Amino acid sequence: MADTQPSHEQYRDLIERHKALIERLCMSRALGDYHRCAELRQECYISIWRHQPSLRPDATAQQEAVWVYWQCRSAFSRRRLLQRANLVSLDQAPTAAEIAAAEPDPYGGLDLEPFADMLTPHEFRALALMAEGYSPGEMASILGIKPRSAIQLRHRIITKLRKYQQPKK
Image (tube, rainbow, N blue to C red; front, side, top):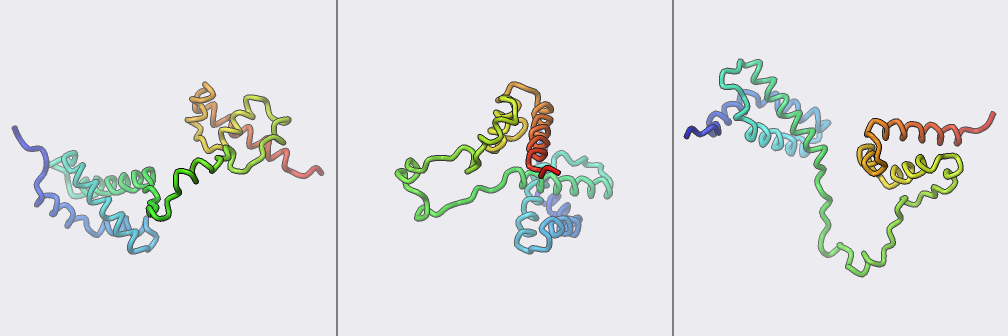
């Protein structure tokens, strides 16, 4: 059975050939922050290592550079989507009693009742979901509508609320 994983030497050579490209992409994405650039560089290296078997063995230098470019872009996107969890020291973590005593405010301190008169019940339910932080896709599944309809519903609600907030002339 042939081993499909490229060797460490092939990986190291690939990184050496495209080190300047990777560094430029990471520094640009990190907006000049050296430490953030170093983290992004590691993400790129990991992505390149994991996906190296998908690189065609007969790829030209230009095709290889484009492949490296897209692996880095993919790593940046994954990093943004999978935001690292904020870690809290165990000394600072709330106790179980503090968590139980905290009454969660579903609307983040917003009073939505004044908007109930100007919105339909369906729109008001959607507004409540928006206030709770649901995405359009999540709203669509809860409300039983298509994701595109949820986006349009959000737009309609925002338009009505802006119209309501504008001073009368």
